[in-house]
Image (cartoon, rainbow, N blue to C red; front, side, top):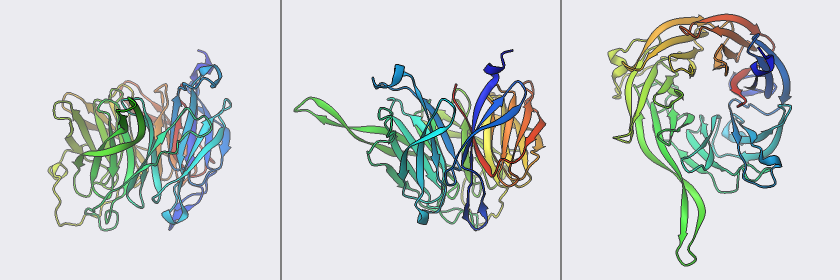
Length: 407
């Protein structure tokens, strides 16, 4: 087996300073690693300092610009800088060099506080955007991305800034809106935004706006818009945090931070809306209480600290990370019954598992530990999805986000 074909490049974002209270870290910014899928070895390549790059989005984008060398695509890394609104958060855009180091090409100050998630996407017309969720201030910021400007990736069209309003049941975590992630569904062409504070996933249609000049018979792109199309209401006190889709975008899976539950959704073409197929607790049970989506006056103070969610490439197995007991939970997904079956819970071998990822070969699962400065590496059994701890890599400071370089 050719070991070169088994090497994948991993980017790791970390907290470099305290965000608020005692929450944060002492990391080194964004680091790139070579991961050998034939041996499970992780090797540091480069570091790039940036304040609190707690979430990354990586995309390879083809240029139409004739000055691009050999018309080859470039790969970009978009990173939030998660700090309070009073400290003026930013989004950094980097181009990834041939040696996997990063070159900063654009910085945008954003309105909002504690941007905790960023997602690059293309709409159905091929227009490019980044969507950023701001936890502190509960807003969504969408920037257009102009890939033809090689050294100024994000153009000067004004971003869209949408503030969510409301609250839910948790006495401290849901007193107001907390936008936590944005993810684009390539099949429905919708942008889904999880709001932990509202117990809602808000669905937007994003499209460019055209000025039709009938006198000159020309069309000028004058901007874009995001239209709210649906509100998916989740069980009270659940706290939707992140969402992932299977490879075919047939189903969406939402991890709820406060209860550790997972909600399955599916887009109906006929109704042009999402339907909830069920919410399953941390042990895979579909209880009556979790079926409810109507608010009551009872305060819910559960906070299990669920963090990330991933599905295997074949769509058979779903994994979630849980900070309350430092575990990865494994579920089997049954597409016929549209349900989850709990299989096992695995100690991660570190403290405060945040993001985790399955490598492109599907053989390994890597877990970032914010508070033990480690990344644990598990073998994945492709037949039944089970995990076995292979190695824990030390001295990777405050890692919280993992992203693979596209092949």
